Image 1 (tube, rainbow over the protein chains, first blue to last red):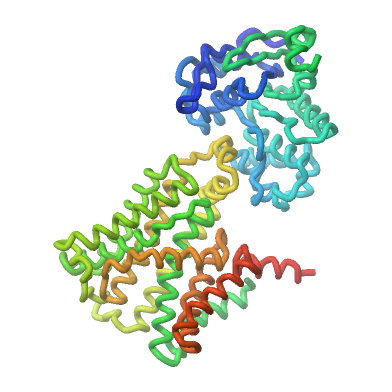
Image 2: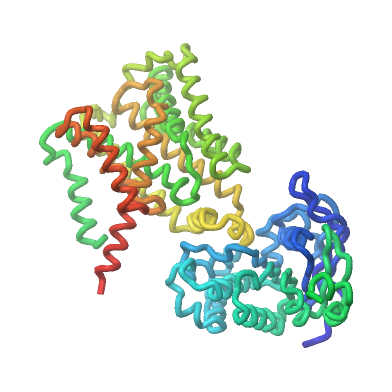
Length: 242
Length: 311
């Protein structure tokens, strides 16, 4: 892997956002460099998910800037942000249960118009995740939790993103599947896609990340190389259980 | 359905007026066709985007009144009044779609019910325009060149054409990018948004197309019964549509048509067999049995059965 150059791929500057009267982000600053794997950790309600939602255009910032690849994207439509190269793997229900595996994958390329490229990527994803190729005609809702997670990741790849946002990829998975999932994410990054990840499992996340940010009440309170955060007393007490 | 099955069905539908023993049966067939268009229309919203409109009779009524008034007051030809009625209903659908933008589930249902209530009140109280509760008698029957489509056989073919058109529109929509977006919305809205589906755009589009189709049914109804009154806004029309869609199989292309056929013929058949006191009771019991034993509807149940039969 090449050393990340110093022009950030993504930068959030003094970002503010709210759901009606409920303020979610209050002056967030964060950068992600090309090729990096950055993780956001923090307690529930700290604004981690809101940060990802703001980046992918699902939550409009009230103040501040989001710059992706030199272009401001705050306030843009989710579809345009996806076309610009940011895919979002949201938390919770990860698939369209009554669409087939194949249709789910195609939904990932919904904004793309290059039919041939999409077909090629379907092939590529199928070789990468053989289990999905095997089950391509099956309803996504009938897959196991782990398979659904793989489908969700594969679907995000179908947009051919340069940056993927993962929201709680370990949520609801068995420890073995968490390992597998993180292995896949590490692999995606190795192949050159930048990753910004929100994760409850701070220990696992920091172990695989290059850098991390700690969020509290809508802003970043601490940031630095992941190894440093792992050794930080405050982080250990609050998020790593000792 | 197999090719042979399709051909037989098409043959039956095309020759119906020639072998049905009396005009009353043909009347039932025409009503089944009109309700078929209505059920297809509701299914687009309920079955594909997952939004329940309990004010669908409003679009039906708007189509009926628009078509009746344009032919009666302005002496427009039916062939101009029909598209105008469709367009007006579509406009109403757009309005409701925009209004209901931020609303889903129960709130969307409430908006649609209120909308139907308001339109019904207007039809009762705007005497100068609608003739109030007395309704509009003498809506002209359509003519085609020198021929009047007043007779039941001719009108049957007109309605059949409308059913085919509505089915075709649904089929094209559902099998396109748009239909995929509808289903994605129904299945998982936040996820649909995150893969770049413009939620607002597609919900409004579904409402517009659905309302337009209901308006088409309304116009056909007006020129068939040749009388329009505020009764076209009755809540029971909406309920009937919902029953047809749910019993037939929501989110399928054939389900609404099967539902419309069964639930137009059934009340008439029951009327012939049992006295009216028992008619509604029998209808209710049948409905409960259907929901208990075929919760996903008739068409999906048949599809599942065929899959099990296949080796």
